[in-house]
Image 1 (cartoon, rainbow, N blue to C red):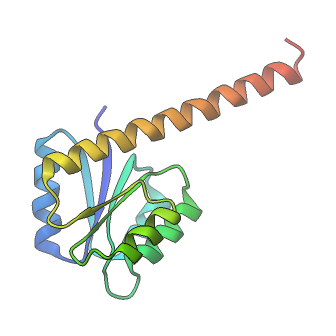
Image 2: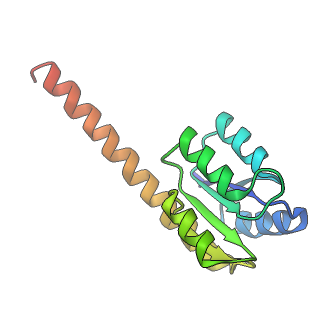
Length: 142
């Protein structure tokens, strides 16, 4: 099954090009061109990984990250920025971003980060399932 990736960036041409490059590498990619769009679609669709631009008008990537983590805390978010600052990187990581990359991100590096993030998400979900199974077994006395 393909890794489901959401790419959110206000630069339409960048989003289109990045989506094509990721799809060539075997990912299933959905795109939106705003932070608000990212937050809304995450409420409706379960993604494996989100690639989110930091600087977007209205709802910034940092604000979108906060809302996404509140809605679906296990989804790893990779932050992208062309205006990288140490402050944004630190803030994003404190808020739960999986990683932080400079634009234009090398597609191979980004692909590797997406695979790492997806593996981590899968591991967390598996731990939760195991804990739930153990809890059921304990409560039933098995």
